[in-house]
Image (cartoon, rainbow, N blue to C red; front, side, top):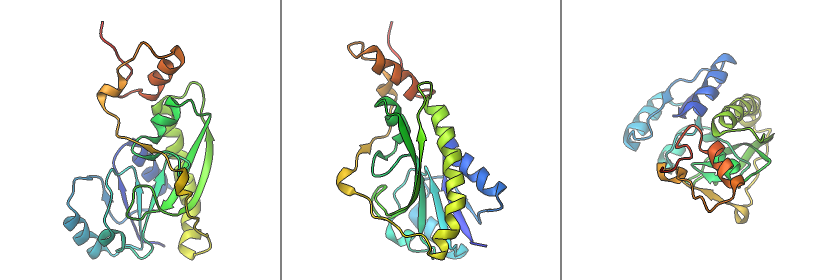
Length: 208
C-alpha cells in the first residue's frame, strides 16, 4: 500500500478525498491550509516520509525543497485538459468561453504552475445547463475515479509521462467579486454564461 499525503482546500478537493478513502486509499495526513509556512510543511513531510503527495485545488505553488520529499513526488488533479486553462479558475473559464468539452488532467508537479508532465487525462462534456457548482462536482468525481485508476500504474512506472505542449498553454486568474459585475454591452449569450460560470460565487450581479 502506497503511503501518501493529501493537499486540498475547497469542495472539489473534499469530493476527491472522500472517493479515495472509500476506495481504501487513506492519507497519512491532510493539509488544508495553503498559508501554512514552507518550513512547517518540510518538517511535517520529513517526519511522515510519504511515498507520494496528491494535490487537488490547494492554491499554493510549492518549492523544489518540498516537491522532492516524497519518493514519487507530487501529483495534481487539475480540472482542465492541460495545457489549456492553467491556473486558479479553469472550470469558470470553460463555461465563460462557451466550451462544449473540458476534462481532468493528472500531472506530475514541477516548480511552475500546472506545467508538469501529464500522467493521464479524461474528457467530459459541458452541458448548456452546467454551472460552476455542477461542473466542479462532475469533474471532481471524474478526477477521483481517474486518480484511483492512475496511481498503481504511476507508482509501478508502467505509465509513460508526456510533456505538455507548452506553446499552447492558456492561463486563468483568481476570480474576484468584481468579475461578476455585468457589462450590459455584452451579448445575452455571454451574460448567460456569466450567470452559470459565476454561480454560486461571485454570481453575476449589477446595480439598480
